Length: 279
Image (cartoon, rainbow, N blue to C red; front, side):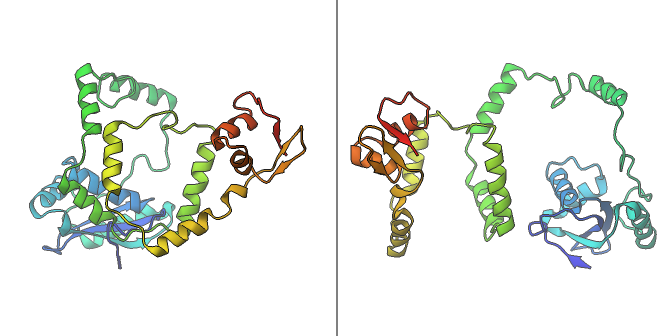
């Protein structure tokens, strides 16, 4: 049986049977199944942390002994069509303490709601918080605005730092993130475009960089990364003189004008009043 730390679970979909076991009282076990065990574990952890887990036995144990007492582990992986059958076998053989219901069941597994059922659910949810169509009061809107801009406490920042310490994205994750951003910004503009930073934000950025000095190695890397940067990109030619420039940056430097000024005119964003064109 492979034990999996809740922070180090592989970020991929795994279908199978899992268990949650107490470290202080190893005889207390919960058996469950899911077509995405990673997502299911985070759901358990989130519900327990927010005091809303439907399993009162598990919630009470969590409240008494703390989050670190519960260990998540994967018993086995299996296909979706035998998932519930295998879960039932484990429940029958292990008689887990935390399982209130002794029958493995998942009413919506492989099913979807009909349009009629969706309408009924929607009507029943009218007026409920977080339901589609629910409108917050001005007081709720103001409270959410304040909470969203409220900085984290020192204790919270410390927890976030510990949870993320040592984490590194794999090359595949970096490539997928890059591809997703490129696809997104083909049809969306940046949310920060045209938004000026507040004086408070500027002061925080300045404070965060104050006293930081680059090493000689870092300076050399930055120097190498910028070397020849002005010659990258597309060439530019003057229609009057026939003079050619290797890039917009090079033409702007020779003409003594800002790069952004020339970039906007040659790209068509602003009417081109110069004699230069991109080739």
